[in-house]
Length: 65
Length: 569
Image (tube, rainbow over the protein chains, first blue to last red):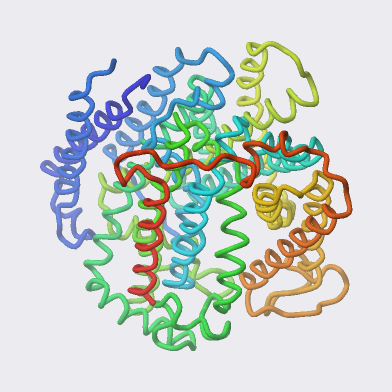
């Protein structure tokens, strides 16, 4: 493969994950009223981060030839 | 409606996304050496990437918004567009048709028609397809920009120009590979960006049981049986028993057979992704692999619309009321985004919407530039040039394809009716297509004249049928009846569309057979090797692992789809 696609996918979702987790930690609790009181930025940020890291791990495990 | 306010974090997410799509195009630019690299990714794409691009290219913003709207308007029956209107055709194209598309080494669907039939059949398909893709990408650009203007207060011009410029940049740099890679990135973004909406919505309405209880209110209020919004087949014995106004026969024949197979088996936009796969078996697995996520997509795009209408009916005031007194269904998804997602996830959701739009547009543009360059420019305008010349033309075609799309988007703002008419004409052209391919691939006696005139007659029959009937409650005009007499009134516009397709397909099928018998065969068995089923060596699945064998995969896909149909019967 020319460019291991898992690399940009992993990088992008890791970035999104970090952004959302940090924002979830610092943001005002009041904004989560609409999301049924759940800090969705924090939790979904963690999901994105996990997905991104798994993609990166796959990309790293098989170095391109 | 009131504009949604976005925070800095939301814009930051959108910008990060833009950086990544452009970055992928930039990195891939150095791999483009020949026209085959640019238009077919050098036939080097692995199955999973081709498969995800296969559904992503089809998943434009219109689909996300439109399926959400239909989920609100028609409920669970909208899912037929996936489980009946996509999956069986995807299995068929992978198992039975891909051997001829990929095996013939045709570089496009029109080129297959040239190899199988003749020049005029190819020309007809190439020209209608090229015009159609440019206009449909223009129309979806218009729809997206209008939506962003309404929901966010963004400038229409800025939305059109910025999104067009980004798609132009990444296709111009990296050709089809760049479009495909970005479609996969966009696929994950669409899934992960919209899924929180489904989760929060379901939690709010009390899960599936809470949702069906609330949908009973919607259904009885509209004068239907309580389960009309939450069942697939229960209320299809009569067209009047369900909000779609369609009975099971026209559903199966019109949507499940003619329209679905016509799109998934012959539209170069999706077939191009499979043609770019690295081997015959990867090409055949592409639509089969794509069928798995496709099966689950209703949870992502239809369910939020169903939740929106359920909440609208029980809590009230969620959906804005349009000028005709009914809820504005097209706003179901945007309203849900604003209702549940706080700053942060809201940015991710909107970025997913942009991603769906871009993947759809890039699909159109890459299909357009290949058909233009190979089937129109190389065939009729300047044949016999060097590959370098056609590669250059591909870049030029990308630019003017996008410029034409932008012009079409602006034309739509001025002449909405012209666009409706164009879409109608495209529907007429598409309806009979599958009959031509079916006969071409599985009956060696089909002749070039038979295919061409069958196609033309099928298209005309579609137009004539549409011109003589009307959907219930519509006035004579763009909706039908324009040929002077109204012979039949269908219970809904959807029923009218399905029957138009059924008539067109049958006319094309019969006329192609009759004309083929009346005309001399112009291709010998030798010419048709690799193009027709009975004259092509069977492909034996030599892959050792079961999950790599197309036939096995196909059976698994169909069995799972059947189970889903039974569960939600």
